[in-house]
Length: 206
Image (cartoon, rainbow, N blue to C red; front, side, top):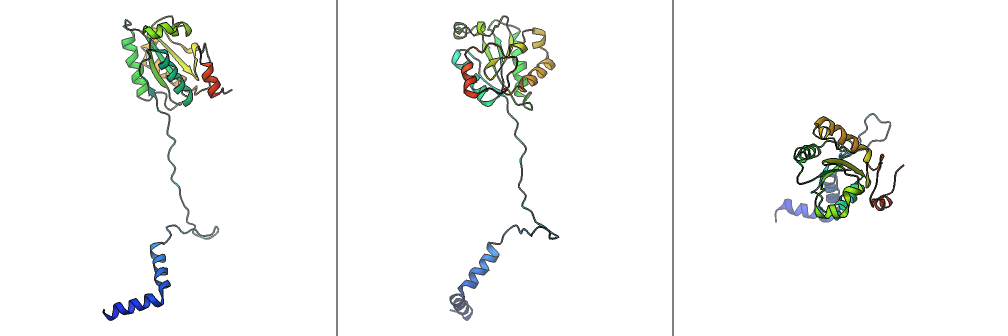
């Protein structure tokens, strides 16, 4: 064994704490030094903050039965985002123009800055939808009809069944943004058709 190695070994045996102190100083050196307030230079620990993530719109599959409809209402109520529904039928030619337009607007993020929305079509002439009487419950008198639900309540005061308005992109954008602002506050509520249960679960805000 060389003399240098022997001397190092003796140094480690006699002064073990010196090696440990050296390692602590160099390997465990603190990254931040905070000086007392009042000194000329003060180092601060800065925590990065991310921007608040805005709510994302949700597009659901078409409603063909009562269970689907109630599931979407429940999801809407729990996330405090209005559920926009477009009532259609298989024979409605206007629906083939209106439905892709509304879906495009929702998917593109219209209303997300205001709180977000959920969206689905309701197949009015689906056997299970007809037998459940959903159209009668929510007073769907013409097809297509655009109806918003907030906290499970149908917002009948803003219901749209005018074909010209439903094909107007600018009108739809404004309508979606206005509905998105509800965020569980309801307003203009109509028949809830069993959504009172949802209201009791998630509470009502004044």
